[in-house]
Image (cartoon, rainbow, N blue to C red; front, side, top):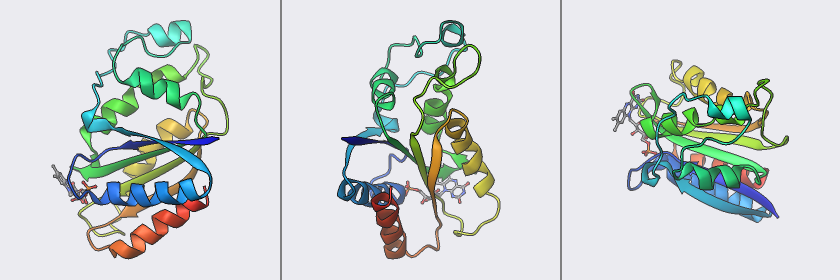
Length: 179
Ligand SMILES: Cc1cc2nc3c(=O)[nH]c(=O)nc-3n(C[C@H](O)[C@H](O)[C@H](O)COP(=O)(O)O)c2cc1C
C-alpha cells in the first residue's frame, strides 16, 4: 500500500494548517494511501549536533530520539507532507529542528540516501494575506531541503489570513486526492 507520512508543524488548537492537512489526508486516503502522522511539537527531537557521523558512514542520524521512528517511516513511504504556521517570517522552530535532522539523508558523496520517487507537499499558514510577496521564497527554501534529496514537489499550499477557509480546505482535499 502507498504510504503518506505527515509532519504537522502547528501546536495550536484549531490550527488552520492542520485542518488543511487533515483534508489533504482525507483526499490521499480516498486515493488509496495509508497515513502516518507525526506532530513535531509533541516529538522529542534534538538539534543536529553536526557530529558528521552520518555523512562519514552513510547512515541515519545516531541521535536516539523520536526522529528514528520518522526515519523508518520515511525510508518506506511514497509521499511526505510537511506543514507549518509562519512564525516571525519563517516556518516554526520545531519544523526547523526537524528539517535540520535530514542532513543524514545524503551519502558521503552527497548523493541522496532516500529511495527515488517520494512525492513532497507543503502546507503553510500565515497571518499575512495569501499573496504577501515576501514569504513564498522562505517556503521554497524550506522545501528545497527535501527536493534537494530527490523528492518530487507535487503540491504547495499557502494559506493567508485573508484566505477563504472552505476554498482552502477544498483545494487541500483535491491535492490529496490527486496525489
Ligand atoms: C509567535 C507567532 C509569530 C507569528 N509571526 C508571523 C509572521 O511573521 N508573519 C505572518 O504572516 N504571520 C505570523 N503569525 C501568524 C500565524 O502564522 C498565523 O496565525 C497562522 O495562521 C497560524 O497557523 P496555524 O493556525 O496552523 O497554527 C505569527 C503567529 C505567532 C503565534
